Amino acid sequence: GAAGGAAARTVSAAADGTDRLIVGAAVEARCSGCVDWLPATILAAHPPKGPPKSTAARHLATVLGHRYDVKFRDDPEGSGMAKGHEEFLVPRLRVRLPGQEDPGEELPEGALVEARYKGRVVALPAQITSVFLDRKHYSILYEDGDEEHGVPRESVFALCVDRQANPDTTSSATSAPGRPAGRP
Image (cartoon, rainbow, N blue to C red; front, top):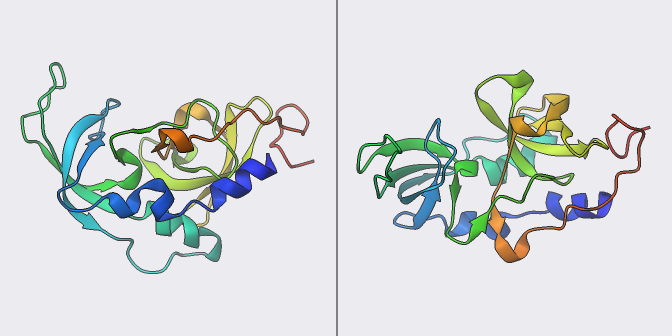
């Protein structure tokens, strides 16, 4: 849906909680290589560096370009992490405030995400530009201006949102099977 996408495209730093991610804030973070959210504290905040490479990526860089140094507070059983483990320059998508959650399996057009470009291991800041009819594949615009189509959901990591702000992602797609919604 275009209506849902328009709302998602206007996400601001205040709406996604970035303005509340300050030094000393209690957060949850995913360490590199982890899928679980673990309690942490922000040690330092790093705003985006320099202007984005393309005009289309300007808003994306404003929201997703933030990075954080974090210290994990606990050593959850089975995590394999040393107590007090610190990680530096953790991407915004891997830091969330208590009370925030993943928006779910189906992501709307306009959602801010990290995606694995061409299936590579490293996920890069991006935005969903269209959703395929199967609701499991996406067209992606990366922060550097590159585009990719047919990216599977398992290669896309969403920006967590406040529980009450979690958008309804049940809008119907209107294009032919296997084609991005909104494209002929």
